[in-house]
Amino acid sequence: MIFWTANYFNVFAERELVHFMSKSSRDITKSSKKGAQATGEPVLVRVQPDMAKQLDDWRRAQDDLPGRPEAIRRLVELGLKAKKVNELHH
Image (cartoon, rainbow, N blue to C red):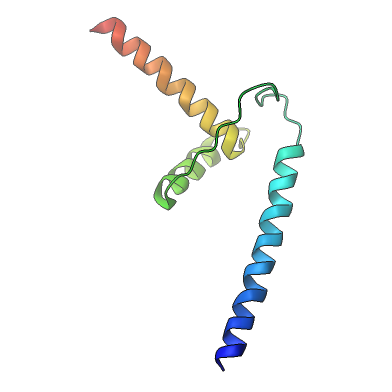
């Protein structure tokens, strides 16, 4: 029974990895008119599950449903603009 469970887990994990990799490669090669230029500096960001959910909820509220990288860029821009406005008023 332990062998079957471990084997099932390996098959499941392998299937999920293939799904993730195929989805990731589509997202990378997808051309977006509003996306950042490929000349930008790549940055790896890890987020906790609760933040990922908030990010995805924010993305779904946008008219054009940006991908996660584009959503992060937009939110960073909004945060930087808000900081600049806050600094002007204090």
